[in-house]
Amino acid sequence: MHLRLAHNDKGKPEVFRSFQGEGRAIGRVRTFIRLSGCNLHCVWCDTAYTWNWTGSDFRHERDEPGRPYKFSPAAEMSKVSVEDAAALVRALGESEGVVLTGGEPLMQSEALIALIDVLKRDQPGLKIEVETNGTISPSAELAQRVDLFMVSPKLAHSGNAAALALQPDKLAAFAALPSAHFKFVARTAEDIAVVATLAQTHNIPASRIYIMPEGVTSETLMARGQALLAAILAHGFNFTDRLHIHLFGAQRGV
Image 1 (cartoon, rainbow, N blue to C red):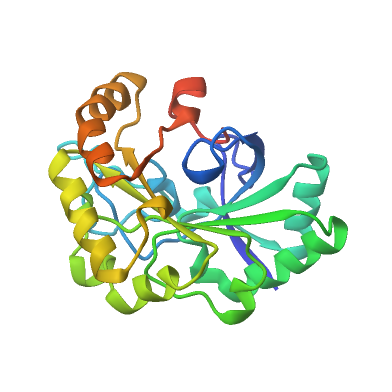
Image 2 (image 1 turned 30 degrees about the vertical axis):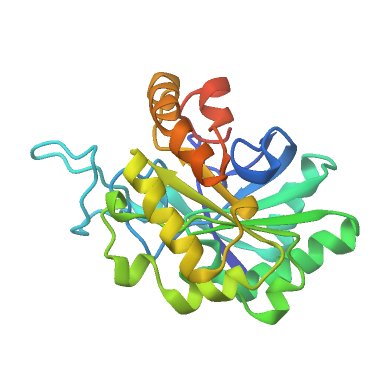
């Protein structure tokens, strides 16, 4: 069985050790595996090299006249066996947990299950975290293997249609999982009101919701974060920064 993995800036599979920059485990040391492919197409996506292929008509905020922000799958993606992917993780040494990120990892659910089983064979106490956009329900087999789902449903400013990005049955499935916490990317206080409505509709406790400012520079994150704080506090949500941006900037493999 194989996984489709994204590439780092050296053209190798993007498997790396860093600090978790977002969400419930922010600041914790983690090993990251970035998978390629996504079923959403966010206009501000900072990992567009996992899905925005040459020849597609998806829009991105970094498009320029005559020069769309596109990537070649041949240059940006590798098929790697489950055993070889596990070996890349093993080569980095032990860490408390592994984060399966993307792209959208749940597009490769069966291979994820196989990978998790190999990783847990090597390190039984390993914590498994999955970052997902919340549009694909996890199977029972996957859910029982995952310690934390960090679910990031996409709001209107992402450029995705609500019918695709905010599917009630999928959100309800994640809301029913105690291991699922939710991270919403926000630009304005109005976005927080939308999150509050979603939380009420799907019975998601405020304690399981994190609001993260959208941005790929420290300056943007600080400004947007300050503008969002009052609304976040008013609804009792958690705030999450993007620690890796402050530490390393917007680059791959961090």
